[in-house]
Length: 53
Image (cartoon, rainbow, N blue to C red):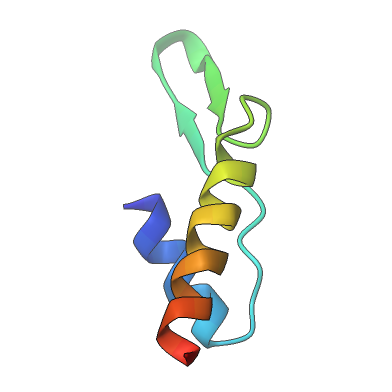
């Protein structure tokens, strides 16, 4: 879901900085803090390059 949202934002020239999951007891899980957003950016950049070719 985050990859799709990242691609949609890219097509609209917006940058998705993070994806937060807020659980019970207000615990927060940040994709950016876990390094997941960087991997999604790399994956989506490769996909965009392939689509442009």
